[in-house]
Amino acid sequence: MTQPKWFTDGFPHIWLPYSQMKTALPPLAAKSTQGCTITLEDGRELVDGIASWWTACHGYNHPHVSQAIKDQVDVMPHVMFGGLNHEPALKLAKRLSDMLPGDLNRVFYVDSGSVSVEVAMKMSIQYWINKGQKGRSKFVSFKDGYHGDTLGCMSIADPEEGMHHVFNDVLFDQFVVDVPRSQNQLQEFDAFLAKHKGEIAAVITEPLVQGAGGMKMFSPDVLKNMRETARKHDILFIVDEIFTGFGRTGTMFAIDQADIVPDIICLSKALSAGMLPLACAVARDHIFEAFLSDSFDDALQHGPTYMANPLACAAANASLDLFDQEPRLEQVQHINRKLRNALTPMQSIKGVRDIRILGAIGVVQVWDIKDSNWLKERFIEEGVWLRPFRDIIYMTPAFTISDDELDKLTGAMARVLTQWSKL
Ligand SMILES: Cc1ncc(COP(=O)(O)O)c(C=O)c1O
Image 1 (spheres, rainbow, N blue to C red):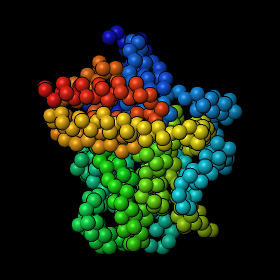
Image 2: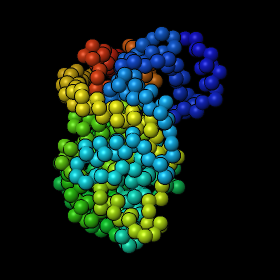
Image 3: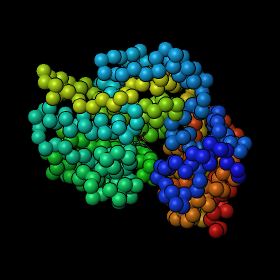
Image 4: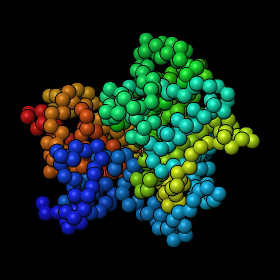
């Protein structure tokens, strides 16, 4: 394919994410998006099965969200959040607090998921400092976990399986343990927390699905047990709902299925409907109150330049309007049924190891992906945008995807995997 001039001129100056630049397939030149379709510069159209890393929950260019951004851009595209507040941010903070369970009432805005996790970690460490409990600065996280790419986030990812093992020598020392799925593992987890509680600031987990770690799933009971065990030992509990939040697992938040209230929750991705970067860490009242005193040293020491960007907050408010006005969770249930019907038979394809489906997440895990570039290219030939990684081929479509589009995705997956199994 001939590439447009902007591509040939600009590509030599680009460094791609998570890519061996020597061997990576050249990226496709995207021209525009609409609904669940990505149109390329050469005119090809791809049905999107990923919703841009799980963000575009209402599909691309939803007119209600686009209009909210357009309206905001002429009024105030950005203003610093230090000393100034604005309606989009405060309205959104109130709405999020109303939606979240318990007293998760204090919203701290940042501009990416990773940074919201960093903030949750800093809140937890400083919480114990402010309470006068010294030495509680470590985190307990879980194997197969992923929480972002910054140094603090990398330190709580799975050190073996994670994408960051090259940095292992320089990362902060943390406790990474098994997800307590069985009774034995739960007892071990309990004993571990009992032994180390004097060193631990918080337990942190992705609830129900460990996304970038390979879409590993666990039940609401496991999540509830984690939460209760942390509480039993007076350890803070952070959930990272950056992937799972806003309907992806079938409920507005994954924690709703376990009926738990964490001390801090991190939100991003679908928060702003895939339109603009926005994230936040939302804390319970007792966390916030531990930072109140007459000393500036007790205040939370964080404040990114673009925090609470009004355009991003306007997009998030418009996205929440859509969750209020349109049947998003019913659409997720519908997608779930269709994924079950279409993906379950793929279990019989040679080389397939496991099929996992939750909410609007469909995962086919294989024993050995062999050549992921071959799969990527075949999916593009089929007119779908699916990106296998590690040992999985997965889909996380927009909740507004049509039956025809979803059939196109699952049909392509079945055809390509059947062909792949014979390689
Ligand atoms: C569960 C989870 N936490 C954190 C992050 C990091 O978010 P960001 O890429 O916006 O920094 C991701 C991104 O995939 C994620 O899935």
